[in-house]
Image (cartoon, rainbow, N blue to C red; front, side, top):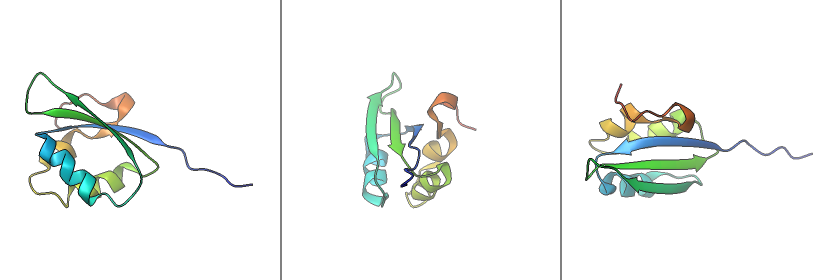
Length: 85
């Protein structure tokens, strides 16, 4: 029997769409991505569906210059607040 990995949904805030494009360029794993505008433009809110862990997502963020907002706001979707820690 083949066991499939559970897909997780993570949510984070980015300062601009350019940060999201950098994530897309540097992430070397499969994911689905949804980008939503916020009232605080140019900020965007992003949902990522993947089999990777939260630490895997953060490790991609760490490869991106000035990614502190993404690092400080990323959470599993049900715990997402958008507030930086």
